[in-house]
Length: 229
Image 1: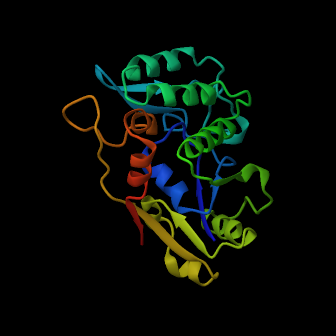
Image 2: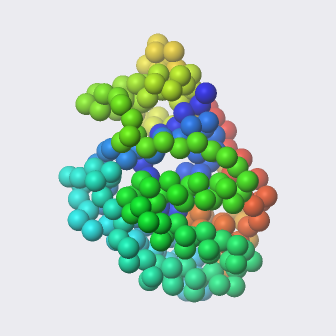
């Protein structure tokens, strides 16, 4: 069983979804410190004026608080309007915008819950079933170093393979995991490109851009453009 762990991000780019896709179980890492000015509550989309950033406020946000202690604001009308104006003429707007609206208006406002809702909704739209759990709801030794926490989580779910983002190469070493009976893999994405509004392709936008412009079949095809090393 392949396991992956990552902090929750709001409608992240395709690389994040490739990590979910590659894993059998995806753990939403919400019992760690909130990162201000990061992608937890913001991302980029493409409008007729070029790249546009959207932000969902997180009242009381602080790097001294855990993600699990914070909630998204209920005031999402401006964000929804921005997305609607940006993609109203996109080929898959009618299919996708209701999904985005449902996610952003989700009753449980905790960051992890809204993000989990978005992951579930998007994979459901693509016809793919994935499993998610929040680390804040699990029992494990949270005071251990990051590597040991990940190993503990792998053992808890009987996972013999842990998949990490490329940046994890600076943090984790394969021999350290191997001696604990776990194969450490890193996901490396291939270039992804599809038709957008502008003449020049803009990479690494929110998954919203791909959902609006690509068919589910094409999104799956692009999602499979990675290798595990």
